[in-house]
Length: 413
Image (cartoon, rainbow, N blue to C red; front, side):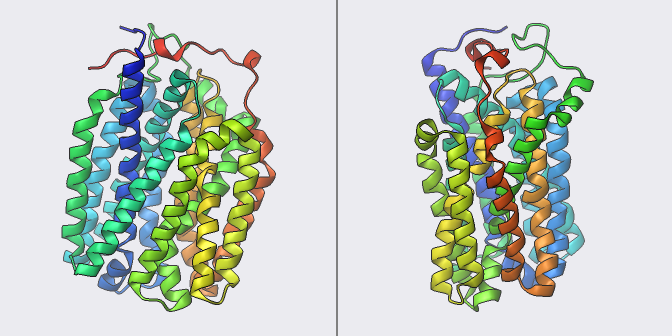
């Protein structure tokens, strides 16, 4: 039964979503921080690692494309928690397959499971995030993505520490899984059930399957998807390749490669923390253009710096530029509450084509020209995203069929 949420319930809901956003970031960076050790255990080339990482991309895209349907039938909370559990199981398999068994096929399968869980959780938590924004009547999604970045930072710091003390990959990733499951059990009841669930009692009109598919033809949704695609590629290329890029491109130690990733995540997290206030003051279009300029500056310094210190400075600008594009795009996709899960799912899917398929492609290109020169592809995509930023301008009130979000949820249960 639908009922209005109190201010305290909205605050607790918001707090829970911060924690939930942090968990996928934590698991991804835990995996990324051990990629040098995993590559060495498998004796894999850069190209082979690219193909292995493709398993995560395939799983994630399947999750992303199925998430909106699952959310419409089960609600955001159910899909979000299920995704976190599947994500954790996949990470456990990755830990065993990568070094204990040194089996690349099993690692590919584990990453596919890991990616699927991440994919459905990603759409669900962003749907929850846009719903909390509307309930609280303020820009929050960049802050939620700051929590994702903070989780990524904590995971990368944990990975750096694990490398320093010589902790094995399976033990490290098993500890990460335990943290994820315990945190999920602690916070999930703070999230109201039924977000974006379509039913006869919902205040938001339901959409037919045909209407959900028609969303892919909407010009604004597609343009926002391209913006998110460019920004996600900018972030994803760092998430998957930055430690190896620094090791291979600048001949630094694996520990320094992990440190470079920490710098990137720290810059991105700090920018996302203040992103909500900047967004309320300057608007989406200005923030997206500034993000593109910062990312381009950083990538140029990394590609052509010829010195790891200059590259680290570039990584700071890269992190600033990658910070807000993805959450701002998803917030724009959620402007109309009718079909919010379908639009957020569509934009997420388009973005993750770059976020997940892009990095393996970068590995294949890097095999021929080197990872540093391969980043020129990333630079081009983020420039295109900046040029299209006008598409993220908020919808006018007259074009919405908005309802009070405080009445769109079933119950805390």
